[in-house]
Length: 176
Image (tube, rainbow, N blue to C red; front, side):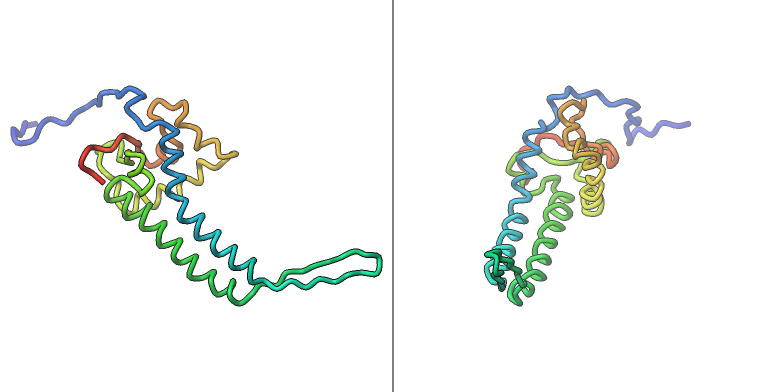
């Protein structure tokens, strides 16, 4: 076995960072709220239009009782497709492209932290970033307890972070 002077020997161990080196749970919650705000606004807009333009038919019975039915409107139905497409596009861009290439979604940028590989300390890329969002389904079982793991985990990771080998750390100065 020869040693090549151009490449440093492979590091066999990594120093263990203190728990406070990782992003606190409350910052992650804040980032999530910022990230989903546009999605909630789009859904609220669609719901407001759909409900506001729905037809309502009521029948009054002889005994004084009333029964009403709501009929969806063409406007509400027509608006659903574009709103869903815009929402999906935003989610793919924010959680896939932006987070995958810079390490930070919009919310994570505001909260000044990033998601990086626990092995390379680099952003995880488009595909892995999108996959990480799907793996967050594990965090929801049972009763969304996985989202609380950062409160007691040494690296403040969710089960999805453990599966994807990612960590959330403060953003390096000069990055988005």
